[in-house]
Image (cartoon, rainbow, N blue to C red; front, side, top):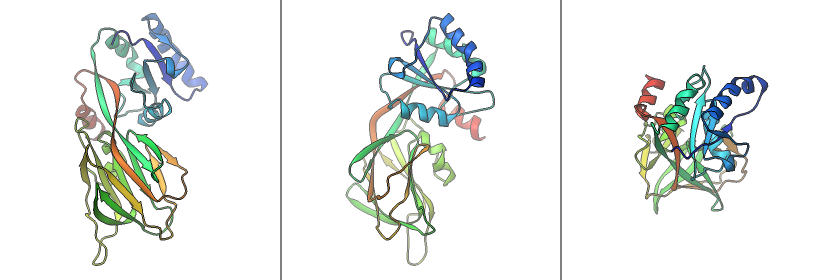
Length: 266
């Protein structure tokens, strides 16, 4: 851990934030860390802000496998991905120098759109109707046609993403040490004519999920990947697998994922 001393700070710069960060930069340099201007030169990428900033940092630096990610929240923020606060930045540097922090590995999903473009997601992918009409999706697990979904949409979440959009749709919170992904419904239509499972379900890392959009006039759904909407117009299908990639983050000892869940929600 001590060889990881090239730090890149990911944030939207403004004068007020620059002023707050300057003492942190100075403290890092005093402790033999180097602040680099290009994320490709970093072996530790630090987002400044909440979970949204962390997700952006991972996405815009390419889900790098050869570095560590960590997040620093500002005084009035909290985040499940962020162990540190601007007020205890010196604790982070001290931990890195004395190897008192541990590496946490978060699963990532691969999402293929229309059998062509593939994207990574650390939190979730969602597919939602853009019009006041139920979207119809044929859901396949491996080679099995599982159900025909009718409703507002579906969310496919990683274990760490299970505390986000997935949780708001009554999905379960999943331990990130379990290599899996979860499918949750958004306002499904269930009656004597139409039927879905009506609950979330969890798929193992060996499974492939395919969602085929029935072309019935609702052909331009919103595709959300983490905290970004993708402007892909005609959607035929999405294929989701658990990726071989893992996002490595740093955490303080005695601050587990479940410590953070308790602190955030209870």
